Image (cartoon, rainbow, N blue to C red; front, side, top):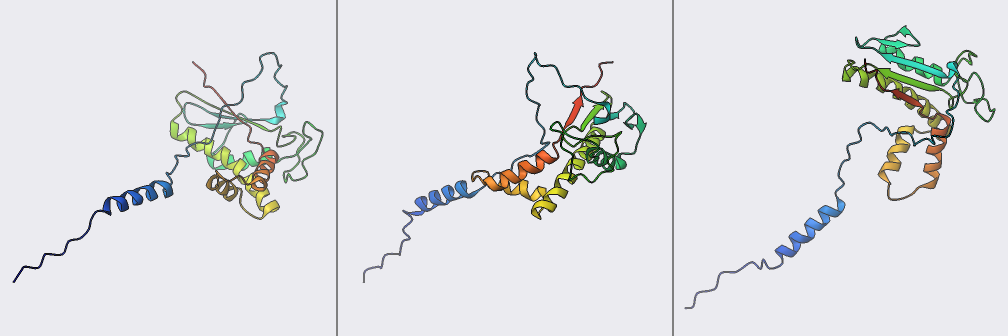
Length: 204
């Protein structure tokens, strides 16, 4: 009686299947981006253009000294109070912008001795060479959080959603332009432009 041949598994197409799975993985996987600090350098200014004159009341000075002490408008302040102080300054709305328009969405005290308009309000942040990195980041976070709070407040009022969710949706659909969403984001950013100037520490 002849022996029956053992059944064989046809593995000829396994390489093709593995290759297709690899392609599927490469196409569908998204690589997480390291977001870090979303800051950019200002555009290069024309050397022949005179810098604009800034009124002192539109300048909010923040200084972090070598002892990690925070001085706001030359007065000592706890970091925990910095965010609210920055919000009060940016959102004051005590005057008009460059076009002569008042800030009808500002909810500040409209103090004539503080900033005129959010697009004129400049925060000047300066630190010392011996300031610790952790403290520098802590103060910077508080200042950026002040802008985030105001932008979020207006996004909720105008579009009934958070500004953060708008940015996340834009980042998620980066290859699919959503003009309506982009216009909404630009509108909020124009209402509260992030004007944060960081001066280099002194060499001494």
